[in-house]
Length: 568
Ligand code: ISL
Image (cartoon, rainbow, N blue to C red; front, side, top):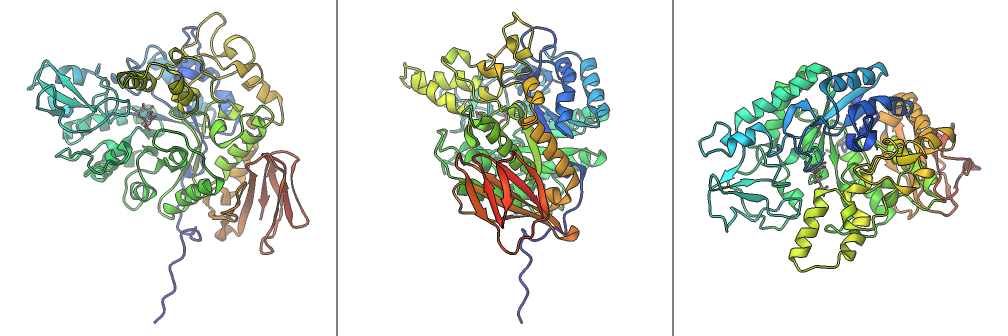
């Protein structure tokens, strides 16, 4: 007997349950770099509050705030020393409450960063743990006996050092997948998990709407801590440890299920299949995950590589369909750990910058999944032209250079050239609010913690809102279109030209509403045409990046770096 094949995931949109976080557009704020209200050169919470209208005017629904907690800032706040306190550098708990209230007053929601794979070494737990082998909090961290010359295994940190540091006082090694000032928590200790759940409740009870979970796939370590004998990239080796799913289920049952909140895990190291396991609603773990193929396919091992549009399309396709219908995707092209999206996927040349920024945002806001916009990308901000190593702040750079020096490198020019492409500090330079001193990020005469990009004379929020052709206005139109068009959120996804080297063309279709859209984006400087298949019936133009994007006589015509969305 012949069986009908199961519907392809691309075609199945019937089983997708509605949720506010699927319909939301998220904007990431990196507090150090957003706006400085008190003139110390570092952004703060009051600065964010003062600029909320900029975010709301884009049509954003949710703000993701990178860590705002008390921290010695060895890794810019991803090293937390008190999970219930606001960093004095960023303000007070009252400033946080005001920010939260003002976010809500604009009809938006706020999610915060939950960094619980590790703490700061300045956290009270670690201060206690390192006092003695029998300290109350000793087992909050991961210790191994040994001798100072032989770490327990070959594990490496993400910041160019071994993942083990010898503690002389207690004659033992402790594990840190990041800096030595970021000791990893021992999730196998139930008391650690209880503390984490309490911290989550503390912030949820305040009214935050969920969490972005830092390196969450790394929390569970294999008990025997085996060597990385397959020489996997470290993020893959550490991801999806033996009890990861058990702990995430527990976290959902203990905490998340009791609140109307959203979760997005940072999934560096997870394949699309692994992502599927973590976000399948039937399993009860996380709502969504940032799957990093869209970032990592651009790199060889640490080095940038040339890439092609068909490769990019394959990544987008795999991400979008792999988790359907029970899971949900995220759409992002940058964050505070990447260089600027414009430099990697767009065209930063001044003649093409605005056009390509609009094409990238059309992509982000019409792909299947919850879209994320990173601060400054809406202005067309680009990589900073660094000229010396001492201009960088990132610990990854400092430790990366130390490692190279230890290997005999003395001339920094090769490293500098590489960093000008890959550094995380490109997305951390101050937001450009206007063309005045310090781009309006901080007061005139103050030295900001990272240099302000010289192009702020033209690339700034004030100029962007004054120009109807800017990417900010484009985003405002696209977020509105997304709200008005159910297929943009829930529709299926079909890549209509997977092999085209310069055009990205896809269809979103929502069968139960009999409604859809065709999105056509030109990733080149050339004017290109594309013949519409006869089976596609156009209702009209829903959006175009500018008037160089047209449809006529069964053909789409796109000027260089332009795009169009057609209603079907
Ligand atoms: O940025 C990276 C390497 O330089 C990534 O490998 C990054 O470290 C990884 O994606 C984890 O990132 C998160 O955790 C880190 C923190 O430094 C990042 O800012 C954060 O996003 C440790 O908490």
